[in-house]
Image 1 (cartoon, helix red, strand yellow):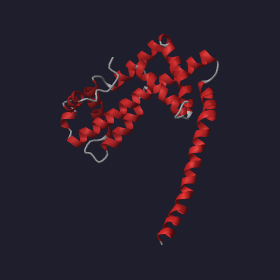
Image 2: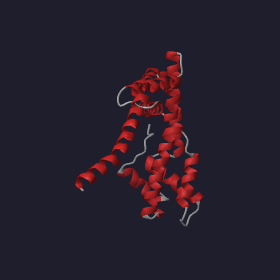
Image 3: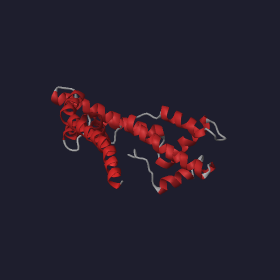
Image 4: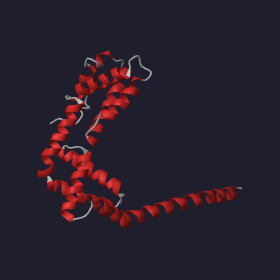
Amino acid sequence: MNTQPDQTKNGMEAARQSFSGKGLTESQFREAWAITGIIHGEIQKTGSFREKLTDYAHAYARNQKFDAMRGETILRDVYTAGNGQSMNQTREALMEREAQVSQTAQPDILAHAERVEHLIQDGPTQPFYKAYDQAAVELSGVLQITQSGAKEMMKEAYRTAHGRDLYEAGKELEEAYHKPVREAEIASRKAEKLESPSQQRAQSQSMG
């Protein structure tokens, strides 16, 4: 199943030779190509693209001779040619995959949920939101699902296995492990800022 964007030379050439791509200047095409990569990332993250496509189509069409509707058509064509499937086909493939793996991949899902704990505790420590996101991105890559879907599956698997909420457990670990490290870093930065002016004055006095 192809759920990853084909951001290769072949994919880019196919997009350039698409019906819409052939009519664009080089700068117009490169902008469209970059935007389709952002939209693909949004589909992988949330399983949705409608709002992002609308927003970027308007931005893309600004200062151009075509309107936002034409801009959206161009972005859809470039995306489809470059990725071998439409935005909606990419989204549907991810949704179908999530339905398939939600019951069959529980060991993987639980392992990534529990990995959040280790990411928070082990150096360098992380706050819960970063550890949760990192584990979800890793799981979504393993199972070929959306990151938001991965997060929901991790929450359910953790609750079933441990009888408590992953967020609550993660925030407790953040308080115990990450917060002291973070506070020490902040105190160190403040101390460095206080020392710098005094050091500069001392250096100026010694030079004088």
